[in-house]
Image 1: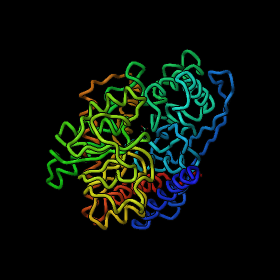
Image 2 (image 1 turned 180 degrees about the horizontal axis):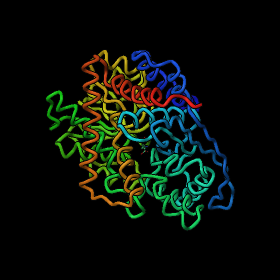
Image 3 (image 1 turned 180 degrees about the vertical axis):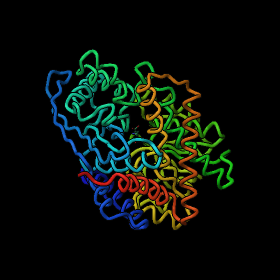
Image 4 (image 1 turned 135 degrees about the vertical axis):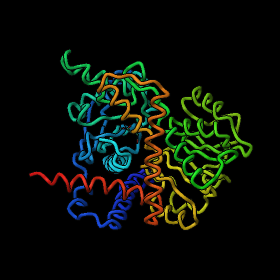
Length: 427
Ligand code: GLU
């Protein structure tokens, strides 16, 4: 039963991203040759590598890196550690990265990868060895000007520091420091950028704020629910809290909780820090049934966990007037039809969670140029870039009478189309 469910999730994401792409491609009459190119991934790497466990046994892991497109710049995208990671999931997520970086106007392409595992089953020492051995297996298929990984589901700055150290160690001493930008999302002390930790959540929050300003809605006292309370869910809540919005429901793999009066974001964060990231058992809220989560009475819904969470099965339950996609691919195509019909608006993932890769771009630039920027400088630049993207999407949506996802895809695909038309196809 569980396996079937996972299979459904995986197949769904690739199907979803292709349907989203084809819908917008049809609408703009995308050049058929360019459609062929963008419909496939450039490179798909699958590696199997052995790692010694703490008890002395050897376990063989399977890792993936899919490079979808690099016509606008080096491949860029995260690495996730999760049981649902497989080749189709990596393909779908890599494609979303291409649209995301294109829409954000960054000089990057799209990639994604990871390892099929449940990290909660391994010690920190084992995770370090798994990460280092995976990096070694990827070898020169990643690189600071070729393909730049970053954190994603269940990976973090520490994971990136291990990747950097392993990658650098394989280079000759004189080459090592040239490779600082092989990964982004590093700890600040190990070449990371100020503000990268909160970048995705800040971007989700700003998109909600820009949207609300556009609709002349005040965020104060607006009730919101968040699925996933990791890096994205927490930081989004942190910034929404500062606007006076009220967190009334949270769901993660450990359980679902609600409090109609609102819960304290920082207390919940503290609880998760003390309980291996899990929200279950938080004293400031009451446990609810998993299936009732998306139906909670609220104004804004922030799915910030995995793909295909809002489907035709639960779309009709949703009471929020806005869905802000912190995760990649949380809403499937069938659910989106239902939601739009009901007048519920969706800030699409490739816009809504683009703060992360924008923050990564700033880190990459600093490493490349030997610069160190202050937090306020990074936040200001991020604000400017996110505002530009949001305005572009809103303008296109209004002028062409499109929903926000289709508008975002249209902009992203047109930028890629133009690059191909100007450069032609080799030879
Ligand atoms: N994993 C994040 C995403 O899905 C960040 C990617 C990056 O910074 O390269 O957008």
